[in-house]
Amino acid sequence: MNRNARLLLIGATGTIGSELTRQLVASGARVRAMTRRPNEARLPADVEPIYGDLTLPESFDAALSDVDAVFLVWTAPADSVAEVAKRIAERVGRLVLLTSPHQT
Image (tube, rainbow, N blue to C red):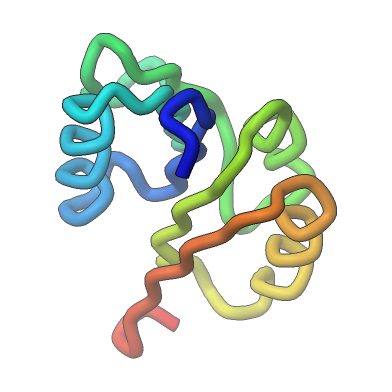
């Protein structure tokens, strides 16, 4: 991936996402983190917090603006997967999806 690429992490405040966020920032990546509570998120200083909610696909539009890739830790109910995937596919060329059978 291009070092200047902007990455959107969805799930950046969770166990896996927070570790990935730290590693990406340490590597010099430009990171945006989507969270339901951007004002409360404990993120590294270089990370841009932005509002978004997996159960409200329309809330993704601002978060997806000007990003090259998305890392998505799926933790929401499965009924919003199709619309979320469609919105990401329309705007971003690269997606990494991490899911768990305990969550989906």
